[in-house]
Amino acid sequence: MSQSSVFLLMVGGQIESAEGLDEGLTQVTKKSRDDRQQFVWNFPLDITFKTTNPFGWPQLIVHAYGIDAFGTDVVRGYGVTHVPITPGRHKIRIPMFVPESSSQLQKLTAWILGRRPEYVDVRVLAQGEGREVTRVRSQGFLTVSFNVVMKDMKKLGYDVIPSEMSTSVIPESVGPNSGGTTET
Image (tube, rainbow, N blue to C red):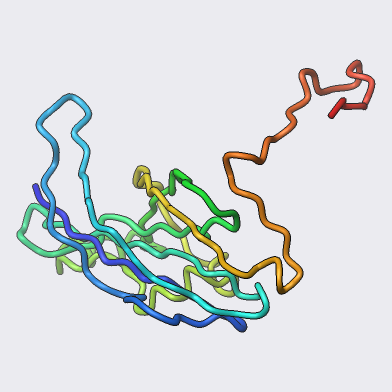
């Protein structure tokens, strides 16, 4: 079984693409032959954004396609994540999902016609509006590696530190007996 993937870097607000592809089709891949049975896309995305305001931070929208039992190209999953906001190397696990038919009749019709539900415009995934009425089913995960470089953010008044230097403080105990304070 083989799958291809389509990516879209969605930007909004005052951020715009300065250089590189913000939409495209990756290569076709096949399931690995080991016990993990993973699909691997080694497809680097090199894109530069420019802005003076972080409103509308870029999001990566991925939709994977594959061939079903009838030989029809169908959506295998959609996934969305924001591009990390700190410089450095980031590994993000994106939950994938597929839209579901809203009734049993629509589900039967989709199966007979070989046309599963899919989004007409995937940009809706990067927005909050209208997503709450879509019925979806979980379809696994996609792991994406980001290498983020930022330039001149300090000049604009934004203090960003590399991800290797930032640390999260996780309280050892949480609950009514924890005392409610955390040392940093």
